[in-house]
Length: 331
Image (cartoon, rainbow, N blue to C red; front, side):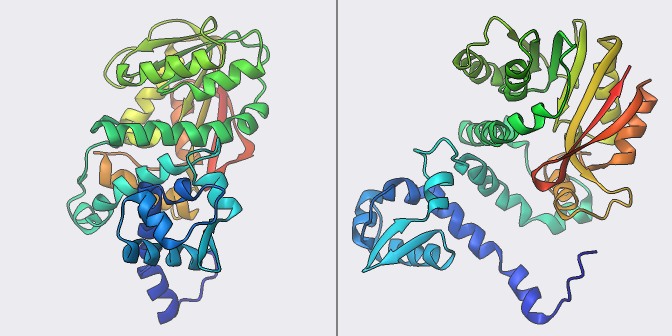
């Protein structure tokens, strides 16, 4: 419990909070922060750069000023430091791809009552959808992981390991950072062939093509081949129901050498399943988009690991954004 004392004002604030989200989504989709860049521009100038209506663009700019994402002075608009750092495509810290991924989820969230009533998803998986959806999903995951991975990887000692399996590793972000942090490590990214071109391009960019390979496969429907001494499963359990999540863990364990390490990274609920807030809401997001997916509690994940023959199971001190956590075990 966070001690919130609800009243009509707070309830209505939450009820209308999607207005702010939609304003942010529109600004990112239109490229407002990118076209302003480091300049100071009038509403008319921004409208011309966006090929948009001056009245509508100015209304959006003023809303972004009210949200403290832009600054207005002498009828000129400029970026805040946050807008320039996180919302302009010219910045290496750009998170607009993830914001666009959230934008693509809006329609399904507006059908939450239907999903709750039927217990069935109302959307396709974003990563399997059309090109724009797939790009925003993959790039969003990549951008977030690139910011998080250095801190997360530094806290996990795998210096005595030699071959890492990155199961469902997408663009290979974590495999890259584990290899950067452990010079004698090599890695295999195992994921769908649609992610391969992006993964290989990214791996090559970091100069790690000789140490990281990519294997095409559907980790749920197919077996996993090879022999490894450490397996990394990041944000893949929540896409599956308990039976399939346990099966994924067993598949990973089956290709580990005796004494091998398995590492689970995911949004983790408390054992009563009613918090923290983001993992609880994320379970609803999985309800909307998957047949059986959900967030899992620490106990549930540890029980799956133990049921797969994993021992010495422990949760690390790491706590990431939106209450992601890391659980480690030895086989």
